[in-house]
Length: 503
Image 1: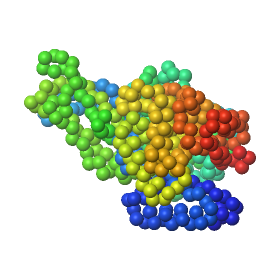
Image 2 (image 1 turned 120 degrees about the vertical axis):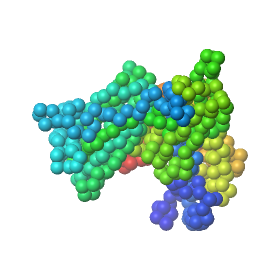
Image 3 (image 1 turned 135 degrees about the horizontal axis):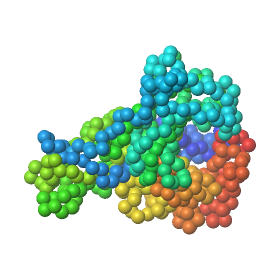
């Protein structure tokens, strides 16, 4: 009613409800009623099928998500029961002194240091909490991009591996609600690359003295030698926070969250009885026993606490011997890389993803008869990192172009009068699309820009692109100026001012 009063005639419903329009009668009744109500007020209600950067496809059918490719992880066949046991056991002692139990002669935790930065704030040991914690108090905002002092811990890790990071925190009297202006715990990798992948957890206000447990996934690229753990507060914000009880476990040999479809599964390699290096055959040389999968749907994003591992066992009549070393390669879900949730993209090489999306598109168009369908695809992070994507031989932009055009074609095949909509930052040369390190830095995906889908004129001309920026800085002005290139290229676009009134 308010939109109608102000003569607004276009409303994008930014939720995943449309995926369930055929599954849940209450959802169907609500959405059809809302669409009818909007139409009576001359408002186009645009249903959303959030995808690309995750969405219901990954939630309901986890195999449609982009995984992490574990290559040639060594296992040994147990002499007793024939099960495959990892040679590299998940580490249990990282980071060093993660529980802050060891203090030096100055009463400060060993292996932890405070780095002085330009902003105000004070770190101290707090023995009044259980367990002992590190506490930082910032009473004066650091301002801009300045930072409070940083507490850090640096330690060795294995390259090309995935780690589960857990810790506890409390946060009080936080004065800013902006996501980038909260206390944060960050992990960065040290390697020979100039660009550094990182993972963030932003700390939110907590109640009482109960600890909040946080976790995230850290993927280390090739040539990684160390990880840097640190915590700080940036921007125009103040507050007090406590951190403690850090633990980091390598996941590659755990056989959890393994992805299985017609194009990906656990592969086993080793020497056969004739001393030849071979790829062993499932159900001939070994069998795979998956865990119960229902728990994979207990969270918006798959969470490592929910799953027991897959079990791989030698078949006595096959070519694998007890006591033998073998190597396993497989794809698994690494979980989200940061709390924004964008680092859990869909796999653009998985046929089941396209089957799921086509049926969802048909359900929505047949039921609501919209003029547009929104697919989001905002800040996709971590593309092209599992075997399904990498074995296509396609670059990031080629995978992306194929996916954009496929979804747009589905829409037109079902109803030629309906148009597909996408956010444009991943194809915008002045935004994330022009950053050749973006997929690598933000989700440890393959390097390479994604704006080439636009620059090489690879996209369906009937797609509607939503151009967005946060403010009026030179960077934001550059992002917005790309709209002119859409016009000259005879491509639909619309302006989507975001967050900042001046913008």
